[in-house]
Image (cartoon, rainbow, N blue to C red; front, top):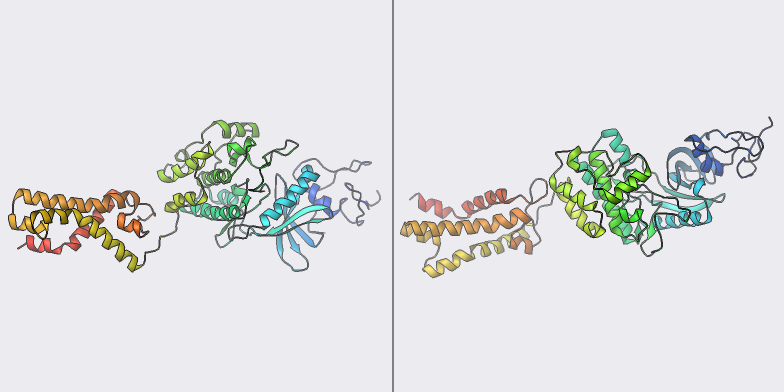
Amino acid sequence: MPPVTQCLECGADIPADAQGLCPKCLLKLGLASQFGGASVADAGARAPVPPPRMPFDFGEYRVIRLLGRGGMGAVYEAEQRATGRRVALKVLGHTIDSPEMRKRFLREGRLAAAVNHPNSVYIYGTEEIDTTPVIAMELVAGGTLKDEVKRRGPLPVRDAVDAVLHVVAGLEAAQAGGVLHRDVKPANCFAAPDGTVKVGDFGLSVSTLAHADSQLTASGVMLGTPSFAPPEQLRGDELDARADIYSVGATLYYLLTAHAPHEGDNVVNVVASVLDKTPEPLTKYRPEIPPGLAQVVARSLAKKRDDRFANYAALRDALLPFSSQVPEPAPLGTRFVAGLIDEVLAAFPEIVVSAVLGVDEVADHWLSERTGSSFGLWLAMTLVYIAYHAVPEGLWGAAPGKALCGLRVVGAGGAAPGIGRAAVRAVILTLVLCPAICSRSSS
């Protein structure tokens, strides 16, 4: 059989030792053959094309290996020959290549390139090589969060929350740049070797100024992953940041359980589940999950967008207590001012009672009278003082003075310590600040 000198797909001239396809068609069609899809065949011989052998040259790049494929195309590791820089090269898929999808692909690459943040995969640029749309982006060596779960199983709570907080930071930066991601999922979140998690693959991203985009293309092909998409996205409704917040909650659900919130035997079943069913409780898979964290995930996955967190700041605040981030001690001066305000407010009821009785302190009244009523009055004032600190600090982490100064008392996990612990702290504070009571009582 004579050597093939023209591409079996597009007819372009190729070297005699090529694989029957030009580099452009190798990228766009070779992947389908490799994964068992429809193979390319010569119109005359109908001979199937074998999977591409790598590396091979493609424009200014040397394509090294396949990294993965998704709804809009395939991603390859490549080397820019002029600089030696390794990049991830995303190529628009052959099956959806059309003038409309070509414009969408390049436009979305430009949108993602506008996001410059440590928690977002950097986009070097978009271009067409031999009429094939490609996006060159940062190559993150650590794999995806999906890979991490496959390797380790469900992640520890703090590891999962820390990773999602990185994702939130990246998406918040994208939102500030006017970009809505629309395809947040573990496979699109990349873990760098230093532990940084970066949001990538803005393949379905749109400008938040655009209102006429939906989950479906004009040909009716669904893009994205229904298991991690909110109901309004599957219905084709207009989207806002709360759609991505839903997907963040679904991603955290997966990191904690190794299961998507909605699973099924086929896409139709999954879509029906997303639209109509409530995900299984996290505690079904992990009984030790903190109830507060389970509530955060459930709220993020609410069917109605109005029931979710309103913005990324609210979601971040809800997640921080379950992260490894340790709150920084407040400056000494600020703590002194907050403590002074709280002491004045906490002692105010006793000041009023002492003025009515004509004594300096209620404790002095009890020590001088030695009666049951004077002891009861002192005990009541002491309990009021303890309650002033214990109740608001236990429930919300701050008494009025601390709240005015922007301070909070937190437990080991970053949450409010609870009334019991706050009460113990207040009792210790009372004993430290009132040594005269102890000394006079022993005399």
